[in-house]
Image (cartoon, rainbow over all chains, first blue to last red; front, side, top):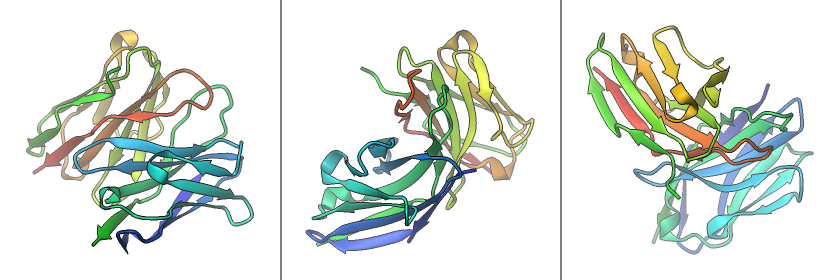
Length: 116
Length: 114
């Protein structure tokens, strides 16, 4: 079974500061890992995904995440926060594809606040 | 290309009533998923359709929930009778039938059971 732990339900950073949102996973098989973002009154939007290719994954809006198998982590970072980054961020894991698409297992989410 | 759409965006009903949620996936996407987020908790998987067939319904909470996808296009999720603990946001997602394909999510339906 897969599971995801997101440390910190709320994170606050100043505009221009580094954004670091933490995600640790547990999986008995090689995982696929995802970060989704939900802006107010919108659906979940994919930021980036790891599917066993490069361990450093670049996504949209300047975000990136690094898959570290030894630490079972997939933390999300952005060098410089912008006010528009304020949203809720979800880490998710899925089993490696074996022929059929399969369900995502999500963490509890981290709400990012960006202050002036 | 239109994204995943869900209707209604909000629904407020009383305990014991019936509610039907609808999801229209991206055109051509064979895979359709339902998820639910109860307040403060994680987003949890409910079920997965491949075309009109239920591939995985392991996340359905109980038999008060009935999901259908007639014709392999849109899907409905009916809750009958609704209970207080059914309150939450119900998300629908769809993906094309390829290995690493992304699941595209709709905006969700916020259900409140009073």
